[in-house]
Amino acid sequence: MVAKAEDAGRLDGLKWLVVLLLVAAGIGGNIYFSGESLLYRVLALLALAGVAGFIASLTVKGAAFVALLKGARTEIRKVVWPTRQESTQTTLIVVAFVLIAALILWGLDSLLGWLASMVIG
Image (cartoon, rainbow, N blue to C red; front, side, top):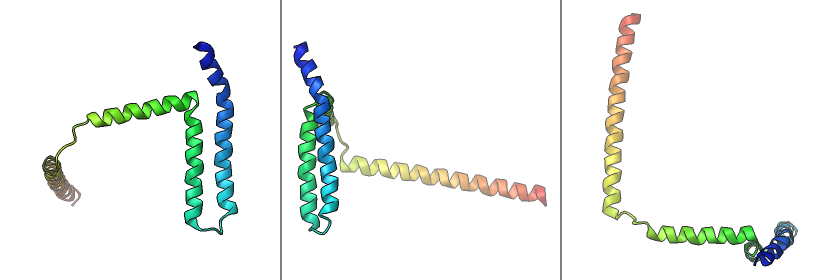
């Protein structure tokens, strides 16, 4: 089991090199074929990105990243999202408190400005 993990780790450098070459080929190809249709270039870049992502996911770090994404997806499914009514009520409460705070600050600013003008003359 440990030998298998070590072999996978040894090939990781080669896999990352292939990923880097695919990314470089995508950039170079996009520049070289700049006269072609944008749709074809985007499709080619998406295909290269898919292949590069697949090869990267075969590395140790890539597999850990894929596991992280799967765990995040599981956690997102556990979230209880607010209803439209709850979101609207919360938004209105926040707006009301912002307006109240703005009025208080406007009042304090006016009072302090009036006091400063009385002191200064």
